[in-house]
Image (tube, rainbow, N blue to C red; front, side, top):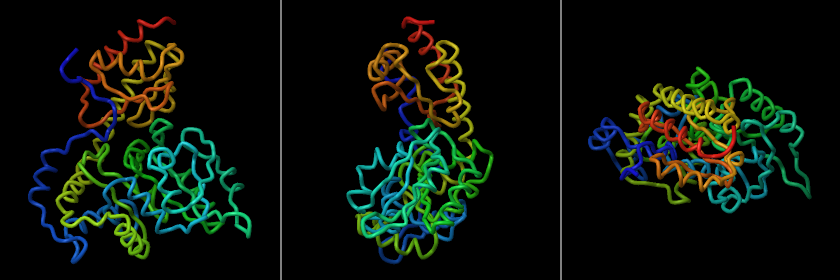
Amino acid sequence: MPESPVADLRSDTITQPTAEMRRAMAEAVVADDGREGDPTARKLESMAAALTGHEAALFCTSGTMGNLVAFLTHLEPGDQILAERDSHFLHFEASGCTALVGAIPLTLAGRAGRMDLAEVESSINPGSRLQPRTAMIVAENTHNLAGGTCLDVDYMQGLWDIASRHDLLVHLDGARVFNAAVALKVEAKELTQGCQSVMIDLSKGLCAPYGSVLCGSEEFIVGARAMRQRVGGNVRQIGHMAAAGMVALETMIDRLGDDHANACRLAESIHEVRPGLIDLELVQTNIVYLETRPLGVSGAALVSTLEEAGVRCLAPDPNRIRLVTHHDVDAGQIEHAIAVFRKVLKAFPGP
């Protein structure tokens, strides 16, 4: 067993900042963002707003904070939100929307991260003395637990049309929306401009060491800035981190296609060895899920076996493992991972 894994496929959150990012951080012009405003953070916010087709933006500590600040700004306690049942904010953000906002999620089953649009519309509640008012639709693009799947422009337009007919808000958890844009060959703003708020994450495939950006109207961002303060998100000389985020947006979006190609190569190679473990239709960006039940082994056990052979990954639930490609795993390391899977999978009984 090597001293350190050859291919670390646990997540794209483990990426390291590039040399250009490190230089930009060291040389950034900064000021107190809670007083006169940090000039580098303002530049990052303007850049993110333009990329998503919005008027303004707010630099936040994390994607979780970005989503939470959006909910705090938009919603009142008791408001109902519609969301796909495996949405990230429901499973991995410490129940902030319910615990701190007081909103009530109504979850709908999805296929590849997509709620059925007719079911979305039929689930909207105008509210009454006894029932909550549906106030928001939340979408996730790409959808993590579905396998990094993409919501395309037509689907997003369908959500926006429903929201417009019923006077609802649409919030997009766009932590990996640039992956979706690259995979779909569209500009990111085509997937985001109809949403009242959009959170984009800088610290996943874009390799920045810190932060997310919440985008929306100028009026919304004024309120969001106050809510960021409320939850302790006002950071003083935040420009050091914002500088890395600017480099991420300038240099790291187009190369996401390399990660997608590596994920596809890995998934197809595993499928050749043991068909049925991976749904290839769901491998659309940089995330691959592998079912372990046909092998008669738990996800955790397979993760342990793979790590001993020099491939690191995670088991998000008892019967699946997740493999995520990113900037810090090159094509050679993918070939190593493929060789490991070929060896490991052949040790299990089956075709």
